[in-house]
Image 1 (cartoon, rainbow, N blue to C red):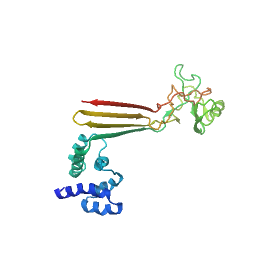
Image 2: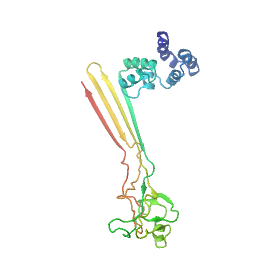
Image 3: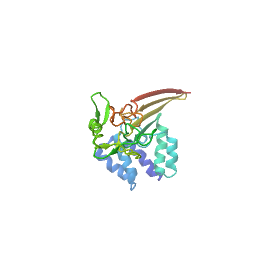
Image 4: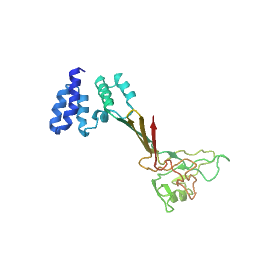
Length: 254
C-alpha cells in the first residue's frame, strides 16, 4: 500500500459516510482501485454512523486486537488491514468483544428392553422391531415428554410380536433402534473495557448460557422408560439442557 493510497483511505472514512449512498460508491471504488475485498469492506461501513464511531473497528475487530493484528501482519489479510486496525486502536477510548458458541448434535439413540431375563440372568436383552413404529415427541396426559406416538400399541403388541417382539432365548436383540432429542445450545458473551484516563480501566463482562432457552430431553438409559409392557415406555424424566442463565462481572483495574 502506498502512502498516497493510505492517505486517501483515511479521507474516505471522513467523507463517504456523510454523503448520500449513491455518491459513496464511486468514491470508494476510486480509492480502492482493483482491491475488491477492501472495496466491499469499505462499502459496508455505510451501516455505521456518528462522529465518535470508528467504523473500521466495528467492521474488523471482534476480539482483543493484539492477536488479530499479529495474524493480519503474518499475511492473513494483508498489510492494509493491519494498518487500518492499528490506526483505529489509537482512536478508540475503549475496546469490546463478542463471543458466541453453538453446540448441536443429531438425535441421540435409545433402545427398548424386555421385561425379563431370557438370555442372561443379570443383563436383559433388547426388543426386536418387526413392523414400523411411529415416533412423535409430545406431552402425554400426565404432561410428561413422550417420544412414541402410541406407546400403548407397542406394549399391547408384544404378545403378538408386532410391532416389537421379545428376544428369543440366547438372542441379544436390537440396540439403538430409536432416536430422541439431540443437544442444542447457544452461549454468548460480551466484554468491554473503558479506559479511565491514566487512572486505570473499567472492565465489564456479560455471559448468557442457552440464549434461546431451548429444552432438549434426555434419552439415556437412566432417564427414559425402556421397559416393554411398562407404564412409562418412551417417557423421559430429565433434560439434556439447562435453563437460560446469565452472569455479569464488573472489575476496576488500577
